[in-house]
Image 1 (spheres, rainbow over the protein chains, first blue to last red):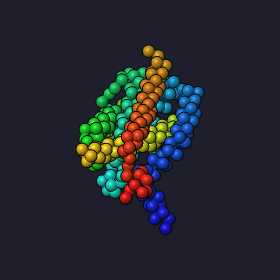
Image 2 (cartoon, each protein chain N blue to C red):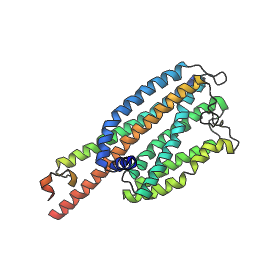
Image 3 (cartoon, rainbow over the protein chains, first blue to last red):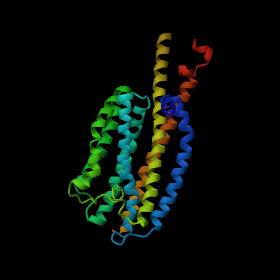
Length: 252
Length: 56
C-alpha cells in the first residue's frame, strides 16, 4: 500500500505541469539554503588554519574538491536519467540529462582550473598527463560532446535516446576517475575523504570542506531544477509554434 | 608569484564560472517565459490550457 502510494507520487511527477508547480515552490527555498551554506562555507574557508605543509594553499581545496565531486555526481545523475529515458521512457528523464550536461561541464571546468592553480605552487607544474587528471579531462570532453549532440539534433526525443546510450557507455569513466589514484601511480594524491576507513583529514580542514561540498551540491540541484524548467518551457514554445504554423496553413 | 595569487585566482575563476552559469540559466528562463507570453498574446494556447467548453 505504502509502496504503491510512493510509485503514484513518483509517476505524478511525470506530468510536466505538476513538476513545474513543484519546482516553483522548491527553487526559492533551495536557493536561499544554498546562499546561507555558501556564506558559512566561505567564512570557514578563510578563517580556519592553514596546513603545516601547504600553508594557505589548502584553501583552494575548499572549491576544488566540491567541484570535482560534483563533476562525477552530475554524470551519475545523468546516467540515472538515461536509464529513465531508455527503460521507463519517463517524460522528464531526457529533460533531466539534457539540462544537467552544461552544469556538469561548468563544475568539471572549475575542478580542472582550480586543480591546475593548486598544482603550480605545490607540484611545480600546471598540468601532468597522469591517470586522474587525464580521466577528468576526458569527462570534460564528454560533457562538451553531449551538449553538441543535443544541439545538433532537431528531434528532442531522438536526441534524448542517442544521448542516453552515449551517457551509459561513458559512465565507465566514473569508476576510472574514482579509482585511478589507486590503480595507477599518479602525481594526484589518493582519496582522503571518501575512504572505507574514514577520512584522513584533520577536522580543521574537513569542516569547511564538507560545508562547501553541501553548498555546491545544493547549488547544483537548484540550477538543475531551474534548467529542467527552462527545457520544459523550451519544448512548450516549440510545440505551440508548430501548432500555430498548422493553424496558419489550414487557414491559408 | 605568491600563494595568495593562486588562491585569489582560484576563487575568482570559480566565482566567474558559477556567475556565468547562474546568469545563463536565469536568462534562458526569462527568454522562454517571454516567448510563451508572446504566443499566449497571439492566441496560441496549449490544448490543455483551453477553457472547458472550447475543447469540444
